[in-house]
Image (tube, rainbow, N blue to C red; front, side, top):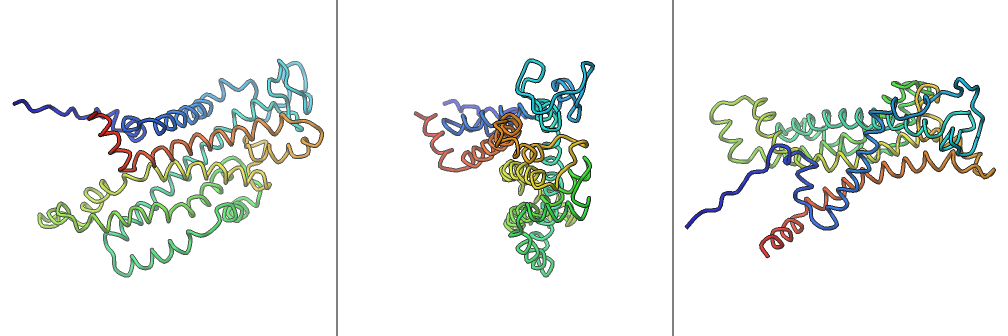
Length: 315
């Protein structure tokens, strides 16, 4: 009687998105693939914006002269021009860099702070745990956009340059997102510190720091990719809200979709649709792509889905 050898997936297929793709079936796989393709398209646009965009984000003239204002789509300007005389297509492409920069900074800051505080609070416990839990519960209900407006005024006086605008949006988002990572990691740390492998590490004389960051941390971050993708879409909306309300990045410092939507409001009554449709579509598509990835990861993490997949393979 031979025993079947179970092949372990390669390191590549154990990465967060690829591992979920390998486990997905049916509608969940379609959602994940669609979300990855949409998000990947915007990532490519952000990386290669200087090569793809026909003009600069604040360029209003070329060798032929000054661009016209509110020009309709044409071979020279495929998506028309804005009320400020900027090329709409170029503004949308360059805006991907601004949006993804805010997402990266906000998510990285919130993950580092939330994971570290949750790990310390859950493993050490005591009065420190109680204090951190109370603070996290107090911060969690804060409206993200309202806090972003306050941070923008404090950091840059309400009108930001490129990096001050990115930091004001990212810091405000970070403050609101930290409690989410804190709660997840703290709950896992409380559970894991009573496990046998942690007790064994204490018996052999491992230090508290080594146990926390080697044994507990490694096993308490499995659900973070789901929270990360959902928070990224909220970060995009917060940045767009700041720009739309006039607290975002100055138009000569960077391209920002929310600001372009604000400037396009007056165009709508005149039948000038192209200045608002394309930036709005970019926001919707990017948020849709990130949300599809997050929701599909959430569905794949459902034990019922994994059971159905095993039954299908057995059949």
